[in-house]
Image 1 (cartoon, helix red, strand yellow):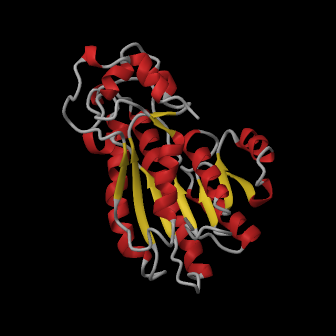
Image 2 (cartoon, one colour):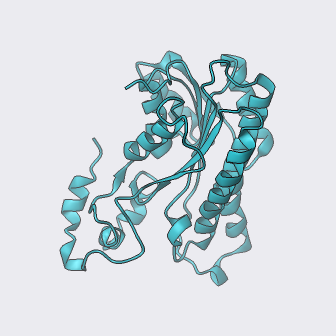
Length: 282
């Protein structure tokens, strides 16, 4: 199926690993030119890119998503190389490891989590929109696209991680507002959000290694498996397509095995080793 992404310029933040890197690879497989963003691991990303068969269609941009000026500088470097940015995947985020109630959270952790997981995507989208306004929409009516990476924590909450849940919940309101703003710049522009549940990534792996964590995570899921990074990336790819998703905006796609707010399985009905096997990376 033609997704209309051949030679499109795509900016993926948080692509040093996990969902971001898998998403960048998927875009590249569709023939897109991909700007992989990272902060502290740009050298690792550059080494990984150099090994890809599509390396000539990739570039690395570095910057702290908490810094609005840094994200504008990233956007400027992409435009300098390729003349425009067609799609933006605001994926960069962080999961604080310690489980703490709100009254136990330090003001510093609360501030830092919001800065990375909410303000970071907003700084990214702002830089993208400013660039879109300067360059203008594509003449072929293949509208610009923004996809935020949210989380099921933003829908169901996450005990011990209120800061993370609040930030991800805020992205829903941002997406619903921004879909009405992007069309003032590009009449065909779209904004959507993908909402992963538990996904096997380097960031999530320590939490999933805790005994009983996988059983707890899958008890509310009809599909007793965890998402792979490419599962989430495929949803992002579809939402970013100016052809197959041309009339889709302001929507959330949840990639969480049917997760809902009630228990589906008793503990003895979840085989942890079987779930690990079904969730193994390709």
